Length: 608
Ligand code: G6P
Image 1 (spheres, rainbow, N blue to C red):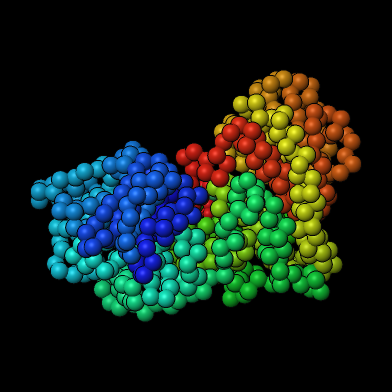
Image 2 (tube, rainbow, N blue to C red):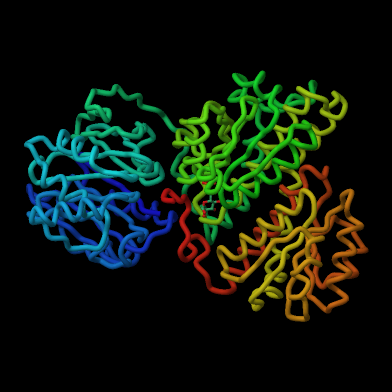
């Protein structure tokens, strides 16, 4: 999705802006641009394609500008082109704007502005904003911006510069993340903290409706009703090392290998071995409501939705509370019923996904309690939730989510244990489960130690154009996640199914060219999955099975097996998904795909 970075201070702006844009590349984009204030004038450079292209364009600029804004665009209105790339300017070239989000009433605004004599240079919705500001300019940009935004429907994160007030950057947000970084005699504005982390970890989060005016030394923030808003500076704990590849070929591979640590970080200080439970401070305020919950609804998108499905199995089995899982995009628009004793959990790595945020706000409108399970501290969902749990996975840069998924499942496991112990789960069983959970990071480490064997297995799969992923029970969502990983980054068509459903359709696809990945670790329905594997074998399908060490029965029926250590069934998804992440990764590499920035995908989807 689109990215914004802006700088005002004593440094030369171009390298700061380019570095910021490079760090935003992971979010997915198709064009890039920047606007600099140079000797009171605006200099614009923009291009279709990569940030490196923009870098080439500005190489010989010899700019001394100390103020600028920059953008990576992910096309919504108008094809990717340098004309549609941001920044956009007004008729006179006095203003330049970059924008994330979507202006929903841009057609009406455009007609109004054309009537007033404005001519448009691009097909974007964004351009109407800058013409609107030009039209209404009253001598104060902050005030004009505030007045104009009242007329705007839709979502935005904006940064604006002007010849009229050449020592300022203006910023505003509604429904699209935007934050301000504070340095010494300098300020930054960005849509994502990773863009500015190199320079500062002192962050000021803008809330929806707020607009900001930044100079070298000062920041002033106004509310939607144009009143001063005192803002707090927050220190964030992420550092630069955490957002660099650290010798790995790709962020995705680095993040897969970080899972032992990220899982340990999610567990740290939260397990109570004595009481056989978990302590999650962000939920303490809601213990009564949780204990008396008649139903839990979990809503999320993408990989987080798969984690939610495992959460459903966990909470229903350990705590006996009915759980419903729903795509956030569906939930928010179908008038969901939220009863008094319902609790809604939202799962989001980024904490910024537009549909999940929409589900949050819909729940709150209906008076429901919203609890977030997020990774990014200070993200919108984290801040707007009534309470919640951070997964502490550290920054996840690869578009395909890996370590966030395993940490989400681990946090959901702790929530389920905690709820279970508040209800019917016995002390003995609680202790046993907690002990097993504490061992999960080490078991994941064992899988990672054998990571090299998956390179050869990928050789088997990478020429296939289709793959079926099957699993049952707790590992049905793992089948969905394994298939999603493969299709996201290698563009191999893959589908996940509950193994028993195979006979109701997908079995028609099985022949000697069809590759089926079966998650077949030991659990109560192991024998059932064994029959499913036999059915594929009988039809000459090619089978890759994920099995527990020492398994002979499935091995005999499979072409290839990946062995993983055994754990309690509840936690097997965390272990079993790791080889599937590695498999997708190596297949994508062999197919020559851009693993960290797969085509058309974005890390956090901040538009509907
Ligand atoms: C995008 C990403 C996925 C992610 C989904 C939900 O589609 O490409 O990897 O699972 O958004 O993101 P969230 O940040 O809400 O977990």
